Length: 307
Ligand SMILES: Nc1ncnc2c1ncn2[C@@H]1O[C@H](COP(=O)(O)OP(=O)(O)OP(=O)(O)O)[C@@H](O)[C@H]1O
Image (tube, rainbow, N blue to C red; front, side, top):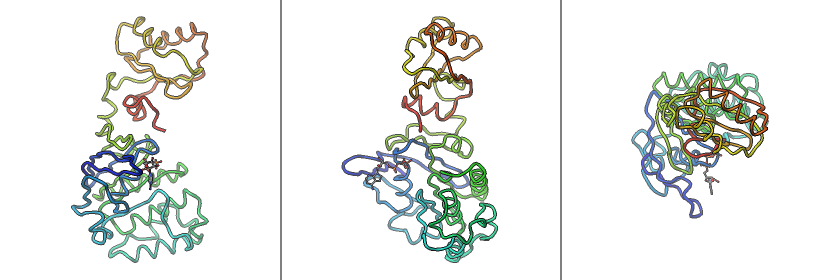
């Protein structure tokens, strides 16, 4: 996809977006709600027509060549897009019969735990059950390219891991998997390449280790703490720069009362931080030290939280 643009009511919700997905790899499009992820993948699926730019899937135009692409591409929509009146397994068997060489339906159902609600009408399924059924329908035809829009949204942890295992297996089988997500752990665990999207543009791309090591303070751990909202974070950064020999401190209030401190974090950092908080007469209610995450990458780039 090159220079993709999509406009609604005079507003560019996708604004010159470039990205590429390759066979045998998981490509994640990561971004907050409203970033344009669904619009982007729906242009690849032929469900929306771009207002600018070029989209090719397996070398074909998703709109003009829709009939040729249909047997080769699997799609899992965010809202399921399933017929609601039929029973779950009936629906899956029906879909499987449309393909030349479908997967074993029972084996797929077993892996995704579909047998527990096999005879339940689709409209009565829970959100997570519907998602699992939609995933099964997306992959049952052995597609070469699979688009998964927020595949594990609303799922319990066990189902989520079943989904992730299936995605890894698709990758091992040479499938090009494109998934949109706003879950950083999903992107970190699954993706070979992550495109971070905000306001309809790619603002960072690369494999996860590259993205996590990029930035002023490299891959140094972050200090996250909770305290009363509205602390003067500029003064905190200045205090650390004065107290500790290294430069390059940044402190942000990512959400009201939630702070992230980045810099050359060392044991003395915590002493300096808690000393400063005590001088502000402020009690810290939570404090953790951990590696940089994709959430931090987004925060560094936009000053906002991913969620
Ligand atoms: N048919 C439409 N008409 C008008 N505006 C739309 C339409 N579809 C999407 N939008 C707007 O385009 C923007 C991008 O939406 P999109 O669904 O692509 O974002 P997203 O990144 O997938 O978000 P989410 O994670 O919430 O699904 C949003 O502001 C949305 O309100």
